[in-house]
Image (cartoon, rainbow, N blue to C red; front, top):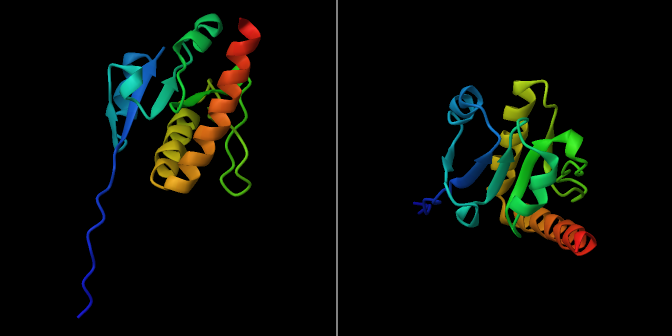
Length: 132
């Protein structure tokens, strides 16, 4: 008899900014936990209602963003391990749901998640050093 240990699934914690009530209601159907403090989050979901100027002030290391592609981040490709965020087309809510779903799926895989965190942290550090 094979004894299989049950794998405890870690649910991603998501901090949302610039999200309409309608979009938050739709996104809450995904397997995630919405948090009120970004320092407790794994993922930062940026809605299309956000302002470009405040975005860098909100971002913190290791909290990977899911945001409209107009912000200029590189969409993550897990095969090539390239990218620093999960992007979506701000005109299509389905695109936002898909991007967040991709982030949630990648969050399950420690190696992939560490890779995108590293890519994002490098970009964040460079961006903040330029703004100083």
